[in-house]
Amino acid sequence: MKILLADIVGKREQYDFVELIDSRLHDFRLEGPVKAGLLARQQSKKVYTLSGWLQASAKVECDRCAKSISLRIDRDFRYVIDLSEEPESDAEHQCSDEECEVLHLEEAAIDSEVIVAEQLALAIPVQRLCDDSCKGLCRECGINLNEKKCKCGESNSNSPFAILKTLQQK
Ligand SMILES: [Zn+2]
Ligand SMILES: [Zn+2]
Image (cartoon, rainbow, N blue to C red):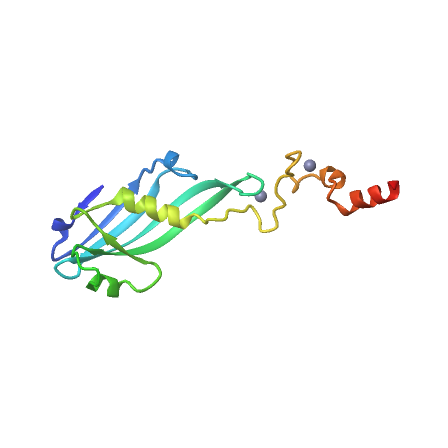
């Protein structure tokens, strides 16, 4: 969906929509479409604000054991759109909190797909763990150490046991 800024001059427009995002472009898999809402408002001649929310379900893999994790995404966001070319504009001042970002547009239109894709990427944590204490996979035999134990560590020549053994053999 494209929102032309010319359409919201002097008023506020509310858009509720469902966005289909192609997850092949990302390292997460979406379960179903993304529900989202946008509220666009003109603040001054060249400054607009865009606040919104989105809800989605995504599947990612645990960084350590590759187990599939379901994520429930529920996110609010805010943009200040600045059509002026000046670096020190009103927009920067209006956008001081963390959730806010300044959007510099090449054309006076908002592409909801771009916004939703960007917010989704921000909502997915950088470190993805099935559990903080996930033991991961054994680097040698690939066994899931949360489920089973293996003997790889014991025969490792760097382990204290192996060093003891070599000492005993001398
Ligand atoms: Zn894990
Ligand atoms: Zn192992």
